[in-house]
Amino acid sequence: MTIDLALKEAMSIPGAVGATLVDYDSGMSLGSLGGGEWLDLDIAAAGNTEVVRAKLRVMSSLGLDDSIEDILITLHRQYHLIRPLSARGNSTLFLYLVLDRERANLALARHSLKRIETSLSV
Image (cartoon, rainbow, N blue to C red; front, side, top):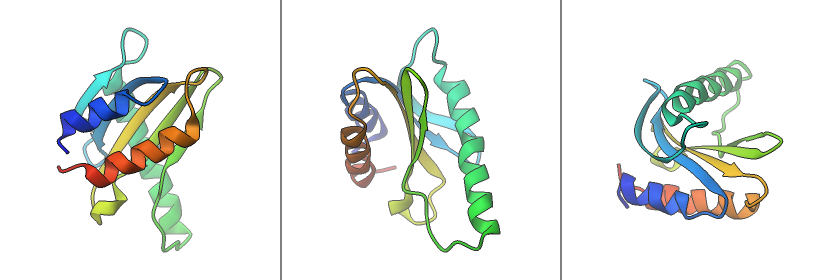
C-alpha cells in the first residue's frame, strides 16, 4: 500500500479528522490528509515527534527491551493516536491519526491502524 492509499484508508476510519505519516528523526511529514483550519498537521507532526522521542528515551533509560505499539492521547473532544511502524524493524516512521471522540470507536481505530501499518510500503 502506498502512502497516499494508507492515508485514505486512515481517513476512512469512523471519526477520522486528519492523518499523517511522520519521520521522527526529522519531524517532517511524508504525507498528510485532512486536518483543516484548527488542525495543522505539519505542526502536529513536529510536536508529536517530541512525544515519540521522549517515550523512546524513557524506555531506554529504564532498560526496557520492548517497542511502542501505539501512544494514545485523549482530549475532551478528540483522540490522538500515534502508531510507530515497528513492523519495519528500525523504522523511524509513525502514523498519526486524529479522531473526533463523539464519532470514533477507539478499538476499531487502533485495529485499523495496525492493519494499515502492516500493508504500508515506504
